Length: 223
Image (cartoon, rainbow, N blue to C red; front, side, top):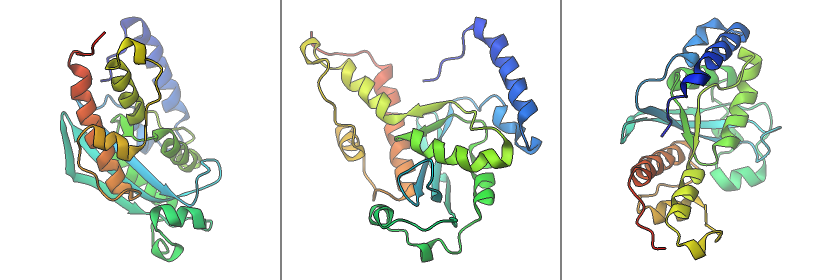
């Protein structure tokens, strides 16, 4: 799914790694820049105080490891995080977490430390991962002076690519429903209660494993 970089890029990537390590504010996190374990990923999801990645904060983190074609549900992380700001009414309607539910949660820095150690150098997987990564980056930058360096795999993009690959020529450009419930149903995967960070991370991991298999097999679309 993530091909090795071409030979001509490797010297540049090595220099970039050294530059990032030089600017890393806490050298205990050098492991983020190590070569990732072979054929492993981490699926990540966050619940937040609202829907603005520039101003809102993480209140719940779910993550699960993927090894090969297996979702390792026994190797998962579930954290509650105490935010510095109120949880919006709109967000509570989505994930059901109230301020009293996270009042005894971890401080954000400690939650980030645990998350980074759980991820290691593994590539990240997620559904609309850009939102979660933006919030995590905001949380870790004051600690480390860098953003998440791991490669990132977007489930909705994989699904869109698979659907497009299997459309007939005259169907190209057709609208594709990228909602998680639709995606899981179309892939014939089990669903869990949505907007729970661990459940969403596991569903994204299941979709990733299934889409890897589908994208590795030749297309049988009709012309």
